Length: 527
Image 1 (spheres, one colour):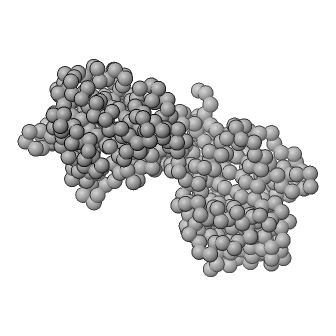
Image 2 (cartoon, helix red, strand yellow):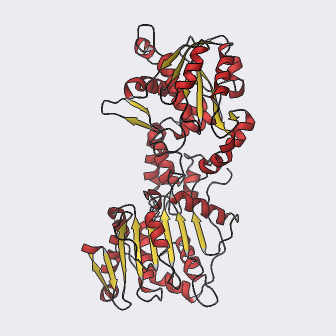
């Protein structure tokens, strides 16, 4: 089956007195919820390994080696209870004078989850209750003997500057709206002897976020690409190529599965995700800890892959010559990715698609680093044309359209009027019929729904074009109260230009002479 989970397997830390003390402290706490409520914590082997490495790996002078621990793990694996236990230990067992331990999260409600668990752990233990005061109205737990406290704070907390953080427990970092609170708290630790930042989160989807930054750094430390002895990465998750319906993958990615993490509940959610594409990314992200390209998937990945068709993308255009076609353009901006999709309907209700893309040559390495996709490789493969300079040379696109027009009956060049004036004027001078396609619900809902139908019924053939497939993975749609939908660039954190160009072309290709959609006239084909 191959590698099914990205899990750190380092040698266990020495059973030092420091490690034993941390394990003993946590094991003396109690669970607070469900069937385990009131029972001793009883760290599982995988949890104890984490605690021993984190608190038992020391410098010769006795200070803790690790200053940051990044734990990425699927939901329902005891994440919140472990975070609460560590926060209490940092408050009471870290030998800090006047410790300041902060439990941070996207909002106060999320930050309060770990705080509420910690507060109940204190209430369940008469000895702790004598030494700590729980102040619910302020989301604080105070340890008067050391002059310290544990406090829950949201990402938009006012007056965050001025903190003197000794311990930071950041819950669900993937949901952080920006990096401001992270930067404020992690840079407030300079006066502390052995500060610790403990992140525990599920995977996210925004690869321009602080969480992805930390995830990427953790992977590089784990894989030996970066040498950072102060950073402990713990990542449980299924690789991107793993079969997300394979229960062996589930077990590898979820260390508590079959213990206190319900296998039956995972099976239920997997069945729903299989039937409802919009739930697939949620299942992969929250249950398998896979980073996805968007928050909610629109087009089913397996169905899209099955639409590759018999002709590969690099020979698609030549195979479709002479047929009636519509060309969709998404010109974006002159410094960004530009997309074109040639849509060629057949007599059986199917559609062939030949796609191509352009990017300024001087910006390709910048874009590879920023978008974390292989534009340079795609250019070498011929899927992408790099135009000279630091802006897209629309002359290349004009020449490409002219070459297509010599082989196809291009009925219309369909375009979003934004940013298109110059090129469209040139194409009209070349004799092309250019039709403006507004990017609103009224115009795009019918072709967007037609694309869904074509993919589900396997009547779309796209040749497996790598960039168009990447765009299909990224696309998120927005729906209005009437049920109309359209691709949404603002909600899609990665590029969707190819799908926008495809839907723009379909907006005209599926319109019959009467002005109604061919799908309204003959009904949709469902397989």
